[in-house]
Length: 194
Length: 194
Image 1 (cartoon, chains in turn orange, red):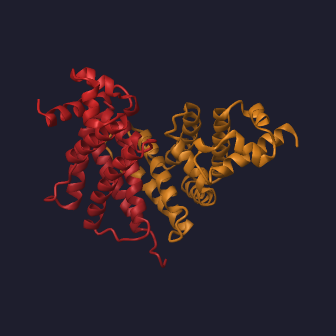
Image 2: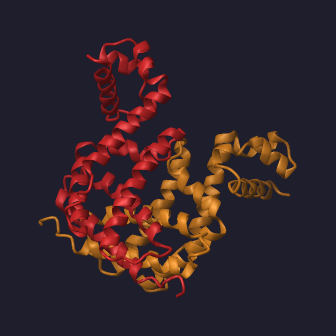
Image 3: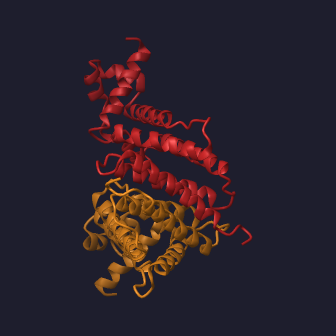
């Protein structure tokens, strides 16, 4: 195994470990044992537990952003729906990873928080693009609405993406309609001059 | 000062301390110094730092719930708007307290988390009542929508309640319309057999 392959293997094991426990409980020693290497080798790649946690969170975040990258060739509303369809599937298939990312947004580790904030900023940017494409006017509440809807979607995905009573299509459709509903709530707002 | 008055004074100082630093940084020693009493007396009332933190969070939570208690005599939509008007004012006037409550929802201290979860459950119950009064049909996504909208509102209040470019009326109106928009997104959802 090349050094890069070994590093990828350790990170994949680290992300998989999130299914059983929170990020803070993932240790260098257990990953070394699972990979059949020495803890010293894991330290070689990631310095310390904090470095390992940062790298695991970046890996999980990048997997989420990659899986939910909008298709630039679609018109705005279809692009929103297509992204949401893939988001629901991602969270259904990687619930623990997603939960770790959402939970990690309040982590005591600044590196972890910064990594996750980047993901929220990227998702907020995607939604801004959709809303701009739909003609939502700019205003002092536009950013607030976008960030708040990201929190809304995180909560809905965590609660419902693995609920057997909620078909993935229904959840994606609900998220799509609520994003449009929030955008409409924004359009009804008076402008800065009231 | 009676023992109960002293306890209330210490808690008021504790809630006020949240303006300067997170709950976890509030210490028995500093509150004792501020109140001009011995740390031993603070320990007498609250046992230890954890007990003090739990009591501060309960005090802050109860102040928020009290300030935003719905008026039962109003019809559903007017009740929603009236509650939101008071919520915006509460967060504007007690931003640090509210921020501590939202942040504390991910606290490592289980007592703190439970205390704050109770507030979210109460707020979710208020919103359920409004939606039931407006005729929103029950369904597998109703609870999800309510909890997700609470996250939405928390984020919007934190970002915008103290923004000088956002008049309190505009923010309350936006929150009202987005709650109705989310409810409408729910009504458009196919039922469990759909």
